[in-house]
Length: 73
Image 1 (cartoon, rainbow, N blue to C red):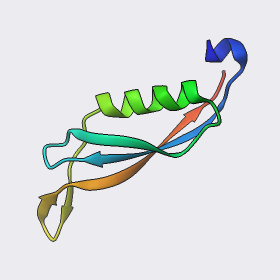
Image 2: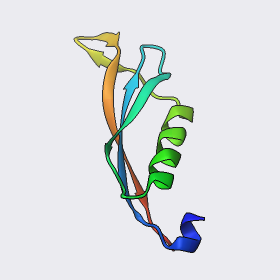
Image 3: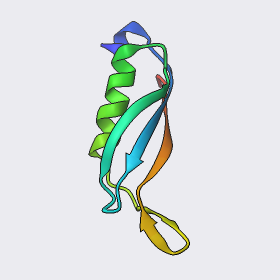
Image 4: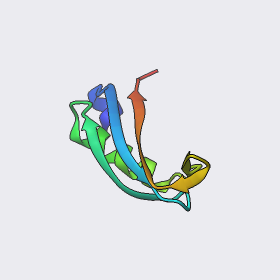
C-alpha cells in the first residue's frame, strides 16, 4: 500500500535492549510522517535480536536508536 501511495521517509525507533539481547519495548523517536511506515518499523525492530550493551565490562539493559530509511526503488 505504501509503495502504491509513494510514501517514503526516515523513521527513528528508540528500542530498549535487554541483557539477553531481546527487545523489551520500542517507541517512535522521529516519525517518517506516515503512520503505516512507523508501525512497520516498530514491528521490525521488535522481531530483531541484538548484541546487548556493556558498561565497564558488565552486560546491562540499554536504549538504542535504530534508523530505518524508507526509499522507493
